[in-house]
View 1 (cartoon, rainbow, N blue to C red):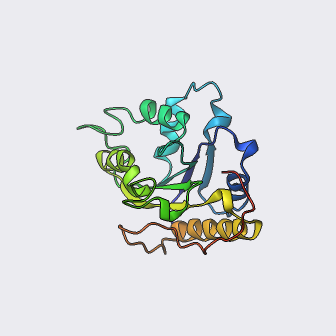
View 2: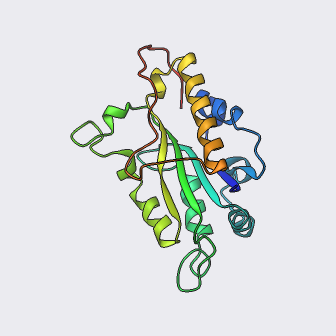
Length: 201
């Protein structure tokens, strides 16, 4: 069973209904580690060696974050720039991450329909994550299509519970090696939401 590292990045967690609930839903699994980047590095002074040791000790890396301007929060980009060093993560001698699996767990305010060609955002979430997918490929990692929670501004309390349970089941399957995925399909099979009750990302 793979060890799972959740690299969590949310710069305003105290305002987040969705991600606070997702964190409470994390299953108690051996080898599952939560690494809250904004808690550890409020001044963006990333401890590169600590982060590399955590990556080395885990088989599956989960990047959990809200979608910020079609990308990741700034501290996670800072983490990427500093931690994934040449000669360690990539390059002729950079093999530390080879064979590991990576996946993004993302919340978006927009609906799934808005993230399609010819729709408001023009691109799918998978397409917008192309730099991270290529980074994974450069480091010799397997890129799993993202787990996306769409439409958070219209998410009801009941809908949030469904999403939290879906995330929990996803992690259990990922940990148990029973996850079956189509490399071209996102994990977005959530029920339709009709209520206008708002929940922040």
